[in-house]
Length: 267
Ligand code: HXC
Picture 1 (tube, protein in one colour):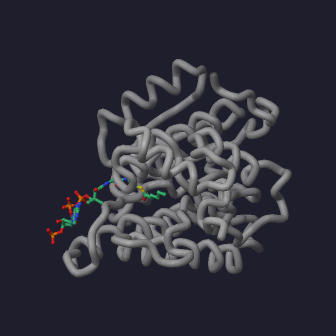
Picture 2 (cartoon, rainbow, N blue to C red):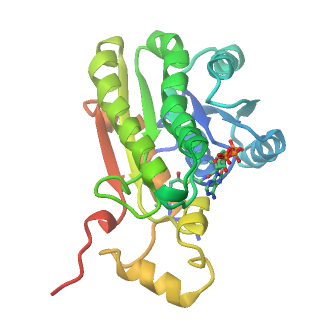
Picture 3 (cartoon, protein in one colour):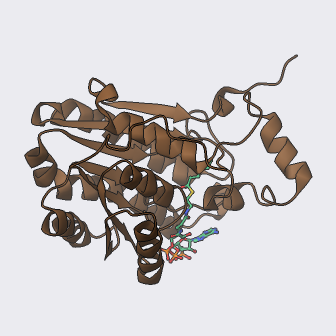
C-alpha cells in the first residue's frame, strides 16, 4: 500500500507544473504527487498514446492534467510545451526536467551518435526546456526547476560514459541556473535517484532485478538502507523542493539513494 504523504493536500494549490518525461515511470509518479497536492499538471514526452493514457490515469485520481507531445532535443517543441502550460492553465511555476535516455554500452563500442543522443536528450534537453520556460517561470515570481539526475557520475560507472557525461552537465546546469536565475524568483534544484524499484533505469542497468532474487539481493546489499527506493520517495523529494519548506534551497542536487553511491563493503 502507498505510504501516506506527509504534505498537506493544498501544498501546491494555485501552481501549474510541467513534467518532461511525465508519461511513465518516475516522471509519472512525480506528476501524480504534484497533482495530488494541488498543482495543475502538464506532461510531455515523445509517445502520444503513453501521454494520453497517463492523463486518463491522472484524471482518475482527480488531477487536472493535460499533455503535449514533443521532443526536448528540439527547442521549438520546448517552446510549445511551455506555451501549452500557460495557454491551458494561465501560468507555469514548476518545471521538472525528467526526460532522459540511457542504455549500457562499453565506451569502445559506443558510437558517436549514441553518445550524442544521450547528451542531447539529457543535457541539451534540460537546457532547452529551462530556457524555453524561462519567461513563464519568471512571471510566476515563485518558481522552481527540478532536474532529475543520477549518482553514477560521482565516481565512474562501467558502460555509462555517455549518461555520466550528460548528467554531470545537468548537475552543472542546476548550479549555473541556481546562480543566475535566483534573482528572478526561480530556484533550481536537482534530485538524484538511486536504484528505484520497477523503473526503466533498473531494468536497463540491472537486468533481472525485477524478477531474479539473486540479482535483487545483490542490489539491496549494496544499499546501506537495505532496500531499493520507490518512485514515491523521489516524488516526495520533489514535493519538498517545490514546497515553501525549501524556499532557501537552490543550486543543490539532493541525493535520494539510501546512501547507495557511497557504499563500500566492510573490511
Ligand atoms: C549501444 C545504442 C543502444 C544500445 C541506442 N544506441 N541504443 N548503442 N547500445 N543499447 C545508439 C544507436 O545505435 C544510435 O547510434 C544512437 O544510440 C541513437 O539511437 P536511436 O534509437 O536512433 O535514438 P532514439 O530513438 O532517440 O532513442 C534514444 C535512446 C532510447 C536513449 C537510445 O533508449 C530512449 O529514448 N530511451 C528513453 C527511455 C529511457 O532510456 N529511460 C531510462 C532512463 S534511466 P548509431 O550510431 O547506431 O546511429 C536513466 C538513469 C538511470 O536515465 C539511473 C539508474 C540508477
